[in-house]
Length: 101
Image (spheres, rainbow, N blue to C red):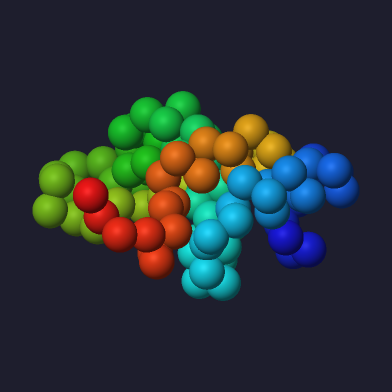
């Protein structure tokens, strides 16, 4: 998480590690990726289709639904990844070694 802005302190990282007991190295990588995607999903959910397609700003007008969308860079920054993002990710990313049942 060195390259991702986060607000997780040492004690919270230790709690995440305890909670991820039984997860493989690949599972931990997936857990971190999932946690990092939560702020991205939140931001994209706030954008409407006109913003995503670039319409109303001289781009994408009159091209119809067949044209490839132009994603505009939002003026807002992504929020930092939090401990709560990891907690939420733990409910999505299960240990790969765990038998289904």
